[in-house]
Length: 593
Image 1 (cartoon, rainbow, N blue to C red):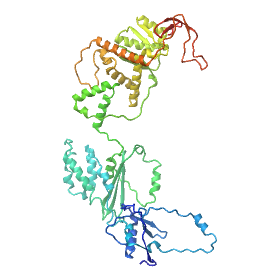
Image 2 (image 1 turned 135 degrees about the vertical axis):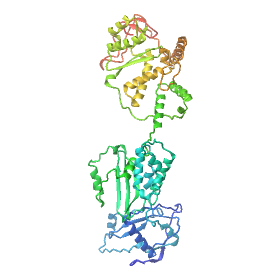
Image 3 (image 1 turned 60 degrees about the vertical axis):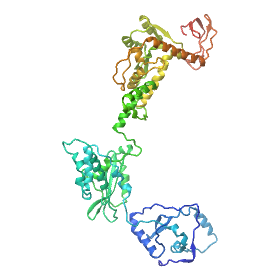
Image 4 (image 1 turned 135 degrees about the horizontal axis):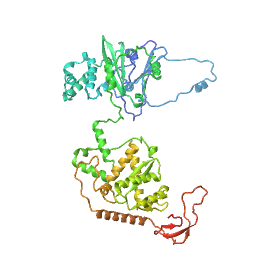
């Protein structure tokens, strides 16, 4: 027995266990290398004095808890929280001092390592079994994951970098010259770049040789240790090595990618002072190694595995993304599905496309010089025209109409709302001179010009989607007009381009094909009439319009939603009805409807 260490013979401790608790085998908890020798000496001494005993097999395997005493000696215990998970509250200092009330003499009684003087019942000794190191330090899997994660070289420069790393440990790799023949052949001046199966086998063989003994040596606490680091623009790499018996041997490789914030770090900021203060507690020498000589860490910092949450983009993914984006560009689903079906029948590659999901936020809004849109819409063909401008004046609108009339000719009728620019004498005189009948809708009743109002909804939805994908405002307008004109309209059954031009517009996915013959316009007119009749019936069923009891020469007041000020009346001055224009539309004495 250890000097001064007694033994309580009359009692053997047998803990009471909860029968529902299952035996636990805990993994080895690593002990700092600086304490290995001290812990081994302490365990050997406890084994010599019969405090500990070796076992071959046990259902319980627990971890050591090593604490350092004030004297510098070690106290070695076992973590028994998994065996007896009970919790006992410790008394506070105030509670202990209160117990001393009335006492005048105080003494201190302490047994030397008292917990080692109580025998443990033989049936309970398996509860305190623990695991410790015995065969030295073995390399962990995490030490070699970085070298195994290096991707296949895809260029001569990457092959050169890979061979530079493996050649640094040339003396540890058997048959290095024979193994690297396929790789070195790719570096010849007149040799075409062809990655063969032999090249893949060579890379795989070099990785295996690099990450197995004798390359990854055991760490020796008494040998000089080197930490070689290198940082590139996207990653950081490091090699832990030691000089053992006069030869530098690697212990572990490591590398990781830098996140976007770290990639913006400079190499001279004040934050490096933090690491300088943190590393000052260690005794080490800092040495600069040029990149041409620091080949191992340099390769690890450039050939790093990506972040787990980072999507990997390849050329194939980019091609698929472009094709899917073109497929989903039209506004209506009719043309999208039709193009997808036709293209899939002619090109089998399209059948393998995935569902495309775009992420991001708008990168560009509406420019100030394009904040107004002037829209012209053909109610027969559903063909839209528009311009973006920084102001809406009568002259801007007239110039736009002149450009349209020069291409398409003059219409018979133009229907507009009651915007100030559209009721001025300049605009009305322009239309009268060209013999164009001008119809103005009733105030505060946009449904009277429902065709263009419905187009406004589609236009805004498409522009919003394109801006969300990062398109410029001008590009969004052009792309929207192209696909709206080429998309089959639900009312006419054909595209606006077919009615306006007599042919289909060619889109990026369309293959060259002969133009289709024109279809009779009577069928189109019949389709429009039938669709409008169905829409009218549906609207009449859901809306009940009360026919006003108003006739010509009556005096009425008109409710105005917009007022000049908050105290003004909602109702206009008395106006006389001139004559009735429709079931609920009347021409008033001030010229309004």
